Amino acid sequence: MSEKLLKTVVRVVMPVAFIACQLSLAISCAEAQEHTAAAVNPEDSVSMMTTYGVNTLISDSGVIKYRIVTERWDVNMVRQPSRWEFMKGIFFEQFDEQFHVQAYIQADTAWYFDKQRLWKLRGRVNIRNVKGLIYTSEELFWDGMRHEFYSNVFSRVVTPERTLEGTYFRSDEGMEHYLVTNSKGSFLANDMDGEEEDETTAAPEDSTAEELQSVRPAPEKRRKY
Image 1: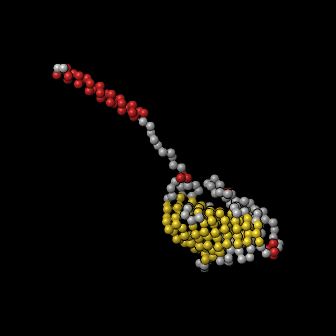
Image 2: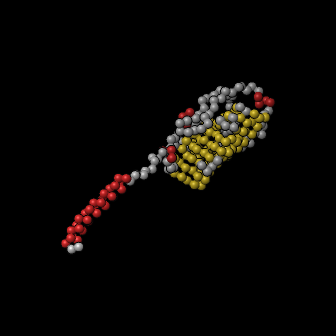
Image 3: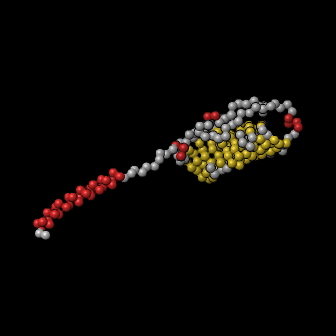
């Protein structure tokens, strides 16, 4: 092949090859699929604060009321409702106005809904007070607005005088005045004198975001504290 003819072939082949290459890239780009992750659900949002090895005092109306000890404390203000989470367990000391320990509270898991001032304790919930009362259950709500405890699952109350078991429990924060319904147990005969029949409104089984508006039972007729 002559040199002149070779140069002519090169001039023709090179542009054709370049165009073919561009077309190939364009087709490849057109066929590429965009891979995107699903939108982040607000309920799956990470905590805005995580603290480990917590041992702190909590005040109420300017008075120190509790000591909280926990392995991990998560604060999540994005989830609705906003909450504190204690997924590694929690231990409370409850104080009186003179800073004397009145009770101990323990649970495997806990949530605190700060806007509602509501604690939800779950998994081996135990309460012991200085008067010898021992309370055990698998779930307990602690209402900071009404200043009371309540549970809609099996609960057991043991005192020096009696033992009670039932599927509904309600008490003041001091565990001094309480009621247990659907109950069985042993107690003194004079404990039954003059008591009225109680009517109870069951608390909901769970406190999901949709149910928190009605998580507190309606006021009920019961004996005076």
